[in-house]
Image (cartoon, rainbow, N blue to C red):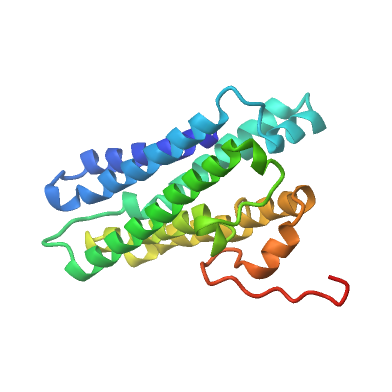
Amino acid sequence: MDIAWGLGFVLVAWATFFAGAPSESNLILPVLTTVWGLRLSGYLAWRNIGKPEDYRYREMRDHRPRSFPIRSLLTIFALQGVLMWIIALPLQTVHPSGTPSVVLTLIGVLLWVTGFVFESVGDWQLARFKSDPTNSGRVMDRGLWRYTRHPNYFGDFLVWWGLYSLALASGAPWWSIIGPIIMSVLLMRVSGVTLLEKSLKDSKPGYAEYAARTNAFFPWWPRPVRKGPDN
């Protein structure tokens, strides 16, 4: 399901493009969505294929094994399908009429590029860090991870606000803002930062100190950590 997440948005973007009146003016949305979706799905496939099942799904399976098939159908596949439909509202409601807004297009491209760099570079830096056996059990606090504890989630956040701005430039209604809002809530409060932080604080020695000096989401300079009299 995680691998299929990015590919689902690619399918939605191109289905919308060809269902309407395809033109060069609204080609940027499916193209940028495809670049983002293929990179994300490709990275997750490289990271997860051949590895044990995600601990969240394994816990769900072990908790109630007999009801797992129907529960996973409803709470994982169906739920993520609904979320994908809502988040992709900016992509689905594009209605080109005339020349796209130059200002909104520039804002959208800037947000998307910045977000894509944070997300892809952050994932690459973390993968490189984990590939070194000497870093086993250590906290990643280098590169982009020095300024935010979750540069990949922050990048995802910017990507979707960039796509929303590009959709507005091509005639999408303002109320499609519900898409990036839902994505932002998921990343910051539900399945992203909040869920991951709970496991990291318990499993990573030194993570509490890292969290004390580094912003959880929005990048900023590290804060000095005050040490007690015994340190």
